[in-house]
Image (tube, rainbow, N blue to C red; front, side, top):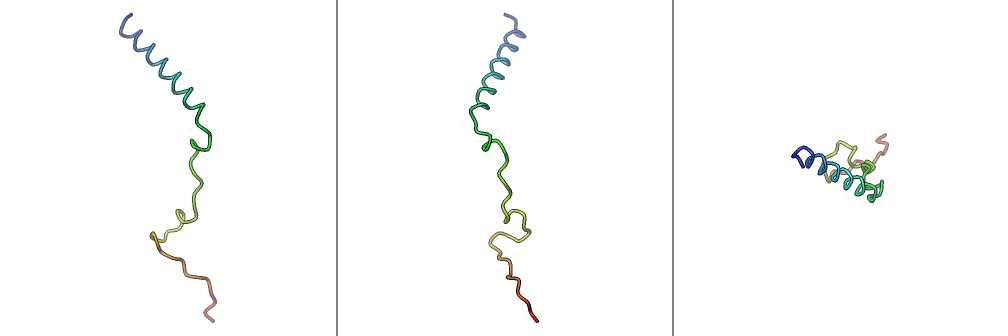
Length: 56
């Protein structure tokens, strides 16, 4: 077998193994997690938002 043929055979085997592994992983683990409210705010870690109260 030539180097090229060995390379192609190895690639085909790797691709097949990756496909089988991906089929076993639940979709929820592959998808990005939902953004949490704290990750969207610009406040530094540990900062608390002030309560919304009328100052009148």
